[in-house]
Length: 535
Image (tube, rainbow, N blue to C red):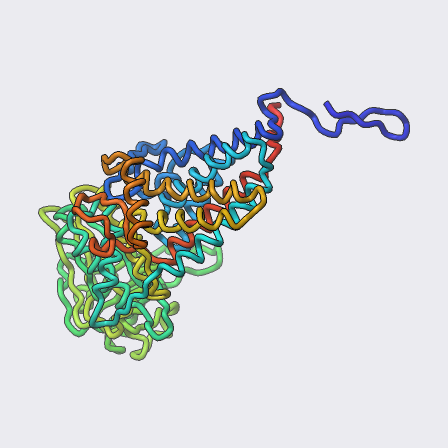
């Protein structure tokens, strides 16, 4: 216990030291932190690449998730260690910023920590290691700029976008129909993209799923799909040239805001109240008819009397539609959301070419399709699959493909996949190490070795001899001066990733290197771990 004394000679505690286990300092703290980071990276290492394995995760309430998406695996793992939580944050940052490469960034960080541990054991100061890593990451990022190629694409030539999305989807559960999925993702992104400003709002793309059918039945709908049905079974199932009233106010008489009660002591008074309520419903339905609405979509429910009246007056309605869906319907149909019934006017109605209710299989599941809208800048990807887990994993795969297409529209530079970019950077970083006379050159060389861990993991997961395969590809890159040579994971017969059409976005790869380096620097600078006291 660290003691100090005040001016009267009374002792007081500055820092209560716990047992040796709960407080770690110096090299012990750094080694403990490094081993925690490496443990997380080891879990994800086997999920990297097109032949990567899936993980099954069970939540405390029994829900099962099967995925090989790095961000999802770490999100659902019950992680206690603070350094492991940093790795989870690292994966989340990559997912938030780029949307793809969440597994690779953690594998890279784990390899950097492994190399740093060897340097610390040789007596090199952690700050010098961190500085060396920073220099090496700058060299690697600049080298990627030099070896990157630009993709030219337009609305009539989207093949480059499709090929890059296919690379992303090749490591997912949907890889057997990756071509059709990539086409759907690219069409969806181009439908909502502003190509002049190079801006894509992915919130305008709704991804819905329904159990049943097969993956190949997944479709892109230029409109909105709502997981609801018509409020009355006898309402028409299809409306052409629909004019839609989008309401966020309840379809019922307003509730008084006071706590007074109405005493009804005779049949006449009850009849008067009932007629009044009926007249209110009548007026509401008539108001909708007068403004020209042929379909009412309401955020709230309405009682059976209103429902019956709507059916009799031939005005189809959908109730209990969520706020996000209402916004998308308003964007797609060019309508305005009406918060107060009195504000409903013909100008605020949305327009759609066709609104139909579709049934699925022999179940009573029904969904509303709103298609051929006035503004097609809101689309829905509708996924079918054999079970709920398959649909959830397909949603995650589609999200990655959408993010890749968005990144290419923002910056159309690509590097080649299959570990070729990492091998090329490793060669460049190793060559640059000799130009630095200080201790940092050891850290720069260690960084180059860490870059090799990604292609090694790819080779290992594909059932190849990792060291033998990596050394052969590295020698080929140096001999041919060809930065496109990578690991032939799919056994095509060529190591040239240009021929295999394996592409990755430049900004995604640069972000991986920069984020992994930042997190490793942060971990290396921690030299004291003080846990809270047990009591």
